[in-house]
Length: 136
Image (cartoon, rainbow, N blue to C red; front, side, top):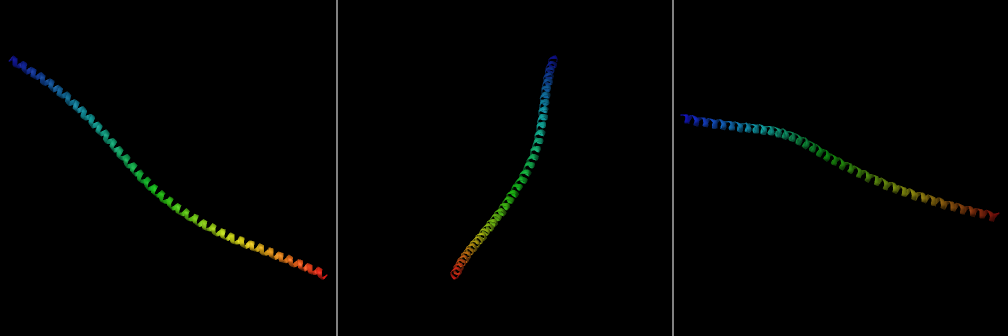
């Protein structure tokens, strides 16, 4: 009986040691699971933050894209209007140059006509003067 008691006592000691080891392993696994849960929560919070930032960036990009398209459209409209104004101004300049040329030609004709008339008048005066001298 004493032998059985010793055997039972040895088994109990091994069982207690085994139970203590299993308790330590359980605590270690629980600590590890808790740490993993904390990491998961942290990663989920980071994911939520990144998703929110991505949404903001996408919204800003869409807004920026729309603004860029509106700007390009406005630039095209302005360019078209400016080209039309330039064309109009060129036509006005050409018309003004044509009118100036016609006026210059009229002026030159008038100057020439006055010169001819003056020359004729002088010539007539000379003839009249000569005729007056010849008759006197």
